[in-house]
Image (cartoon, rainbow, N blue to C red; front, side, top):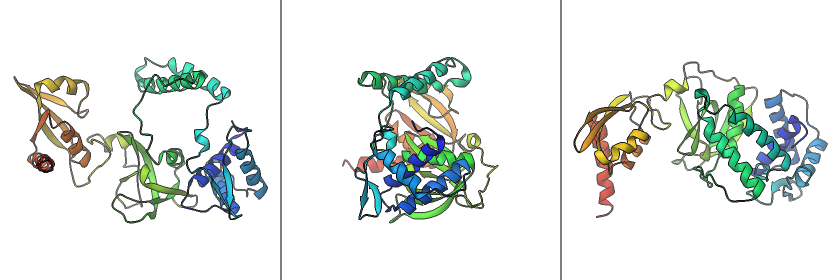
Length: 336
């Protein structure tokens, strides 16, 4: 591990720059990026010398910290990784790292069983499995839901830091429908995961509506230290998402009672894995059961209901029932 926090910030910043293949990085560009990062995270407002960055690159190339970073210079001017998939975040754990992880696991295990720490169970199991596989070089014995091809995870920590420190960022973002990427200022308030995909929730300006952006569509993040951050005291994440399946909140839609018929054989599954935390059972029939959830109509709700269409039927509201019927009829038509 690096000897101090400032060095770690410098290494991580250089690493993130060199991973960005959409831009060519000169030594001056790296100095500017590192200086911005140190000001952002440590409040350091003094210039970083060229010699410091050159030594950092030399250290990253070496085995001193175990990085062995394949940093090359193109056209005698631009720095990049010869391996586009390389990152210092992907290097194997050292014996010292494993020792520290063991200590962390021992501490976390003491809290298991307390109601306020129920979500730690998965975290502890992940750490234990990581330590076991690294130490014994064996296959994992606990397999969690992951998507190895998921892009954008490298932005999780930078976004966490800007939310924590209330900083404005410039996002270079390309939506699914856009022909090219678009750059804009963004005030981030929350990181949210849904079905193993990450989103950042915030707004573009003080009077703009709250929106969510998928991390896998982000191309670049740049911190704007001097820009004014717009607070949003009215945005309370728990309340905002209380009646939502997924991450999309349509401002024009209000929560409604969705009534669903469930095949009797499928009821045990929804008893253990509810459609939504508001789920309430209304009727116990001979061939089906009736349940109700109170949610806002959005795309994720439709997707969820359609995924169970073999075992349930939407009864109300009529607008949602018609929508689901239209989608399913179109799907059947593909097989005619």
